[in-house]
Every structure is written in structure tokens, then in C-alpha cells.
Image (cartoon, rainbow over all chains, first blue to last red; front, side, top):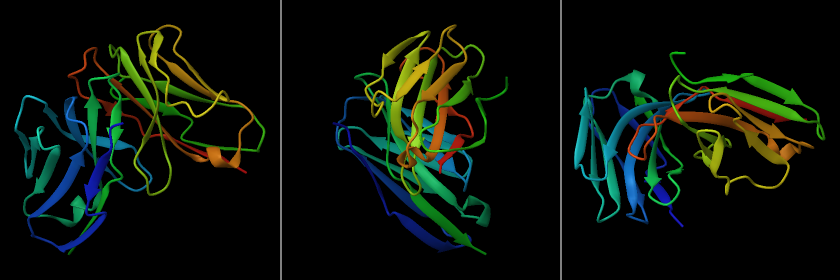
Length: 112
Length: 114
């Protein structure tokens, strides 16, 4: 059974810092990995999608990497801003059944 | 529509009652997913539709939960004899056909069973 773990569970940083969020998964039989952002009381906003054949994807200040063989992904946020405060979730799409399996998220707070 | 739409946004019901939650996927998206999210947890898979059929319903917790998608577009999640433990946010997502595609989520329905 696929298990997704996100470390740390919570992170508080001052504005302007670069930071890294970690995601690990136990079964490398995946189609892709997706990073999401969730604001309190809201749904999920897709940030980046990395296919299993890719190593990284970039969007603005966000960069996500994928090492499928070791079961790890990182989300790098450059020059963090208070508006980046949210919960960040990673999810893998499994080759068996195409379901998305989520981690429990990292709650990020960026302090002004 | 422009995004995945879920209605209602909030639903309060009494224990034992029946509820229906609706999801309107992005137009043209053939894949549709239902998830349940408890406070402080990641979303938990419930069911996945490809077109009109349920391709994977292994996440439904018991036979009180049922979902349909009769015309391959709108989906309804139905919960019978609701229990307090069913209280959660129910999320719907859709994607284009194909395993490699990006999933887009709605804003969720917050269900509270009192």
C-alpha cells in the first residue's frame, strides 16, 4: 500500500527566506506527483505537476524536484512571502488504479 | 464551467439523515474523484470515475456511502444514515482522460453531522 509522508509537519520562517518542503513515498510505481496548496477552509490549488519521467518543474518562485527511484520529492520556495502561508500537500498518482494518494501536509507560516 | 464546482459549500444534518453532495467537474474532464478530509489530515480517497463508471470504489468506507455519475459529467455522493464520524470536508476533483494528467479540485463541501 502506497504511503506518503511529508516533513516537517509545520514550519515557521521569517519573510524572505528560501525553504524546502519534503515529501517521500513508499512505492515508486507512480505516473506523476503533484504539489498542492490549501488555504484554511478552502479547497486544493494545484501548484506543480511532475511526470514520473521528469526530474523537476518550475513555476515562478516554486521549484519541485522528483527522484522516483528513491521515492522523494522536494518543493523549494524562494524568497518566501507572508502570502505563501498555507498548508502544502503532495500527492502521487499510482499506476494501479490511478488514485491520488496524499501526504498529511506541511503547514507553512511566513512571518512579516 | 471555469473550475470544479461543489454544492452545497456547507451542510449541517442530523444523525441518521440522508445527504447528497454534488460535484460539477470541469467541462470535458472524463475522470472524477471524491475525497474526504478530516481536520489536520490529508485528503483520503473515496472513489474514482472514468466516464460514467466507477473505476475504483475501494475507498468508500462502508455501504452507507454511494456515488453516481449517470451522464459522465455531474456526480453525486450519497450518504445514508449519517453518523457523527462522517463529519468532514468532502472534496471533488476532475482531470482530463489519461493517467498523466493534472487533477483540479473544487472548494469542498463541509459536512457536519449533529
